[in-house]
Image (cartoon, rainbow, N blue to C red; front, top):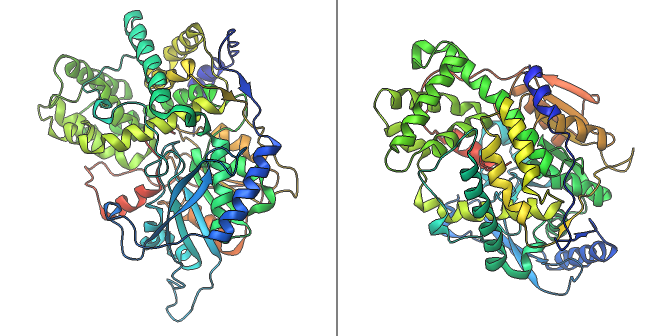
Length: 547
């Protein structure tokens, strides 16, 4: 069940008008053109002829021998398909053909299942590893599991906006109601970051968009030798999956959209991020109530308000002296934000907070301190996230609009509002042209029936987005995990959800237009160490600091 009072109040603040771009600002360009559609067809035909030369994967991927890796070339600019090409890295594990319930039965292959974990900025190269998990063995028997790194990500023509060595700024603050001087400092940082993206990426920066991600997907389909695509997108992957469905409906075989971005052009991306901040307040309340129910374990308070007081106490203590020299209020907030995405993180975060307040900072440092060895990957992911969202649609270019909307929202949703705003603020000062968002929509019979999966209390992609997607894609079916909030539900702990997933991917069977499953059980109140099973499942998860 949701928290309708808070969400309705916060949601009412989102109905503000985007400020008009001032004279001399970046111009808007059409969402797609005939030249780009033609360029996609040319690139796809070329990719089908060339295929993908799969072989051994790079050693640093640390994947099993069953993994194969290769590359597919796509145009940087689809309006110029014979111009500059970039290479996307692709991973694959062949269908096992093994029935996990009957060793004597050979399962027929149904083609390739291509997966994107979201972001923007996340790589799906590790996705095929999930085939060893019990929840995925039926699907792995019938499908080649295919992951890839989208344009800009990892080795796929990587983007960068700052020196990775200077990316992590720790310790850092996280004020819920920032001062004017703090806001001005963050404006300065946002402007510098936007210019850094242009300086380090040059003219190619404008080509990193959701529409190009959708076009790349069609080229990948052709390179895999598939006449029609079977695709699963999670989080942000649902958005450009929906763009793909709109642009190339006849190229779709089956499509699963898991944890859905609201595709309404008026929401992309400024309002979507405001709604996300509002929803995180409800999920933060869920987490605090869970901690309060287990006060006998954690000692952080027996009400949500008392748990908030414990969290605030820790944040103030960290503002005075960073834990381990690296964990300040910003790192504390980041660790607890990730718990808003995945409730299996709740026990470890609650344990770390409890022990920190009792004088032991080691668990919190382990969870929250930035790791220098991950700086390059994190910087790259953030650069792609920023470029794609800033390029995709108009954003307010007047700071007064951002200040007004986020100040109002922070009164009822303080946990994530300003951190989210500052993360996206480079889009106010973006140095290249923005697009108009495509109107995602398919009519009856244009697109094969599509499966939409959504947790009812998902904060990263609020439930209203799934309802909107269900309305816009004719013949789509929405399966809701009730009273649950994990971001990304396919192949997770809910057997009911997985049953719908298997029935659709393996048999093409769908329920009526709406169906639901009871939520999965809440986590048990005990610290959880990283287990092999969870590590594999995390290959399905997008970036916790993004979408």
